[in-house]
Amino acid sequence: MTYAAITGWGKCMPSAVLSNADLSTFIDTNDEWITSRTGMKERRISHVSASEMAVVAAKRALACAGLDAKDVDLIVYGSCSNDEQVPNSASGVQAAIGATKAASMDVNTACTSFLYSLSIATAMIRTGVVKNAIVIGVEWISPFMDWDNRNVAVLFGDGCAAVVVQATEKQEGVLGEQLGCIADARQTLRVRGMGTLYTNRNVTSGVTEWDFDGQEIFKRAVQGMVQASQAVMQKCGVTPDDIDLVVPHQANMRIIDAVVSRSGIPMEKVMLTVERYGNMSAATVPVALAEALEEGRVKPGALVLMPAFGAGLTVCAHLVRWGDRVTPLAESDAALPPVTKSALQMVQDIRATKTAGREQSTKGLHEPVFIEQR
Ligand SMILES: CC(C)(COP(=O)(O)OP(=O)(O)OC[C@H]1O[C@@H](n2cnc3c(N)ncnc32)[C@H](O)[C@@H]1OP(=O)(O)O)[C@@H](O)C(=O)NCCC(=O)NCCS
Image (cartoon, rainbow, N blue to C red; front, side, top):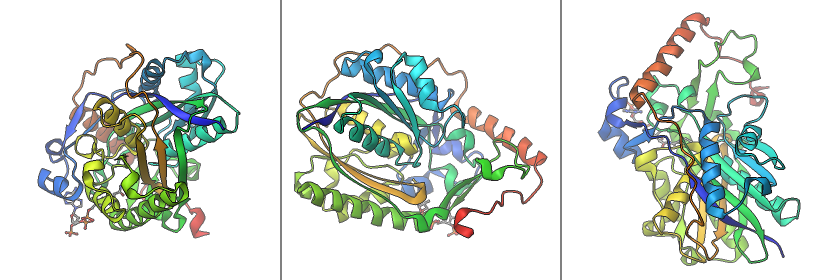
């Protein structure tokens, strides 16, 4: 039987750091509130586009796997912050890394996009459609963040990581997954101002506002991730004691705490990045996975549980059996260009652009009729 092993990994984190203290210079918030309610201390702000981060991460993952870009059959780009609507971002990565024979697709399930993309690549490998795939989780949220809304502005950051997935006869890679969507809660997280629904509504490009019901998302996220984790463990015939490491989506330290304690897994088995990076949406799980490998927390043959949720509200949990190799075969020298501005300055520039855009837009125009209202 064919399986789909994860053989390469690479992250690409922008270097500019936005601290809680930086946030409190322009919104009514403070380090104590953010730390106690979310576990976050800082997040990164990217000076380059999502696809530029993705190219660096993909090159690092390829070097790690010892795979030539020309041998890649598939690129799946998981993100909700694409450079453009058309053409897709995966094709841009294909061109930049020279993966000339790779089929290239974008997948958007918000914060679960990396894991849904991993399911797609795994299924295509296991059914023999492709042999070698790159799966990317990337987000450049800062340009469409609602920076003057303290309910959301403190929670998110930018980042990227990629993995290489390859056909193998050994029982490795995704052993099983549970995917789902709690669509009756889709209105709890919505970015207004992006998408064709805003056509003819005088929304100036880039002026985005967020609908966000944090408490409802919190509740649904915990329920959804616990149920998905239990379902995938049951499907694969494993118990919480069999799990060696949990690499969860990192939207809030309290959510992670609730999910693992209700799943019967001790916190010592959980990989955490939330304090340093906040919620990077689709990039969160692969960055945490890459750092767990860098820190030697993934042992040969380890069983890794990866639960996540995102806007939609999409939920999922994946069980991955790691292979023998937990170190890179080689390292790429790919790197981002140097950053010339502070994270705070970049955020202030975005805020200034949005303010100018808002002044051009007529009030009350972010009101299209959404599908669930028809
Ligand atoms: C957003 C979240 C951190 C809020 O935590 P909470 O404990 O539910 O906080 P509440 O919403 O009850 O807000 C409590 C108070 O803090 C205030 N507050 C909100 N954001 C604040 C901030 N950044 N700084 C200071 N105060 C803030 C609120 O206005 C509220 O004040 P009030 O009591 O005077 O009305 C939490 O609900 C959460 O993590 N939700 C899910 C995260 C998520 O959805 N992530 C994205 C999806 S992947």
